[in-house]
Length: 326
Ligand code: FPP
Ligand code: MG
Image (cartoon, rainbow, N blue to C red):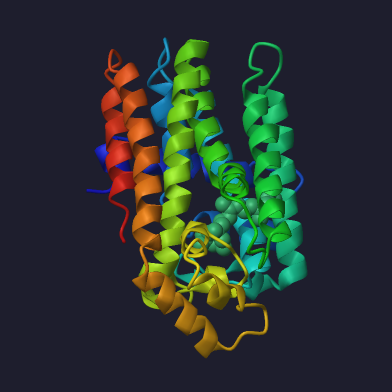
């Protein structure tokens, strides 16, 4: 069963709202290349994880979710999609969601402008929903978006930095991945008038889930085949990303000098050799344990929310994150 089915959420409603963001934009005619590129991008699949989190959050409110919740869920996907345009350019990724990445179709310059336009427009739109009564909306438009950019900057700052600390790795992962998920749950809850206390618990749940998600992503880069990943395995290290498996492997005095020898000019054979050494070490198991630890933290928050019937939806999210295809 698909995640949205398990959560009993109508994906068509979310997709329609995402489409509305483009077709109701008065400044950009729907037939223009800009609008068509955004439409193509936002309709090209994707699990809609972040919108689903907004809707699940709203089930902890004191009133039923309305149109505003749906609009916020579409906005969350828009921010995510804009960030992936930039991410694929930065990573030199040719594929996204099984098809060519946007910059492969439009060229890098157009893709940068499309990504900028999408995020700027969404910030403008969300500021209209904001206002004194709905100050939480501001968290999605500015805080989460700024953190995304910061996380990406922190990642770039530490390319091939083998002295990266665990704290720096965790902070980057939190900014790049976990805080948007946390914010989606919180904003969803507040849009349906939950208490601040409940919204904060959901935020912590989303943050723990997001940390586990990013750490799993870092493991998958070692364990999955290129076919499944849609990019060559070992891409992270090839691009100088020092992820958690690498950090753990660096603690082995025999492995450390070999790993540290990898740089931007290393040959594919040298890289392959180091990837194998990391694969054979205990680094992946230790990384998995950290991911599990975040999932346990998330599970204990579900316990604290067990008086809400919707806590069952958090269990479904937990199960989904724990069982992501390895
Ligand atoms: C995926 O990383 C990327 C992110 C989670 C965030 C990227 C954020 C930016 C590029 C900042 C720009 C943001 C805006 C709003 C314009 P990944 O490369 O680890 O995952 P992947 O395997 O899906 O590519
Ligand atoms: Mg990427």
